[in-house]
Amino acid sequence: MSRSKRLIDLAVSATALIVLAPVLALLAVLVRVRLGAPVLFRQQRPGLHGQPFTLYKFRTMTDARDAQGRLLPDAQRLTRFGRFLRSTSLDELPELFNVLKGEMSLVGPRPLLMEYLERYTPEQMRRHAVRPGITGWAQINGRNALSWEQKFALDVWYVDHQSLWLDLKILALTLWKIIKREGISQPGQATMEEFRGSAG
Image 1 (cartoon, rainbow, N blue to C red):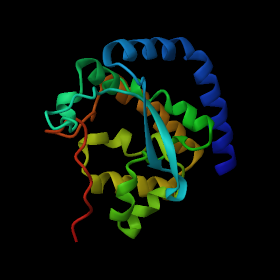
Image 2: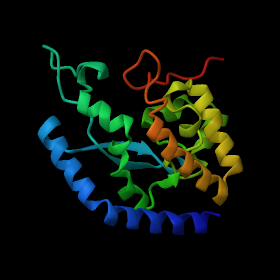
Image 3: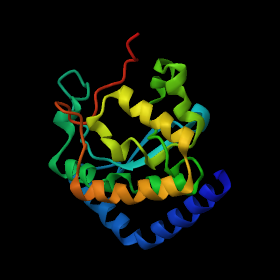
């Protein structure tokens, strides 16, 4: 499974980057004009077995700060254009480079924040037994409308049941979810509240 999955990741990501090159170029220009530099959002995220890698996305927020120089809350920095990029998942397209480099897969648990590693239960930590993905089982079953515990349970379920056919199903359903624009943000949040650990 891992070898065939990697071959598919390579073929699809390379083809997509070539086909979508004009779209990527246009989005880069729009992000530069609407949100400024840098065009790409770069952040260290945990990959396979929790090893850090640099995630690439189109930026969706401004760098607006308060009088003390602190970044304003996400809701105040997320522009209308940024919301559009997120709702259509266009901001995720640069992650195809991560897939090409072998740091991510097309399908797998979403790469979250490095600081979350020490907050996971041993069961939740199993989500890092596979490469993180651009989309995953949790993304087609609620995305950010789910609680953290629900998302992690779905991630671990994927780890235990992964197959080529399941990946194809997830990719197909992801396109449908993008069209419907479901689960983009957690209710009452601009994106998703911070994971602070599971109770108990």
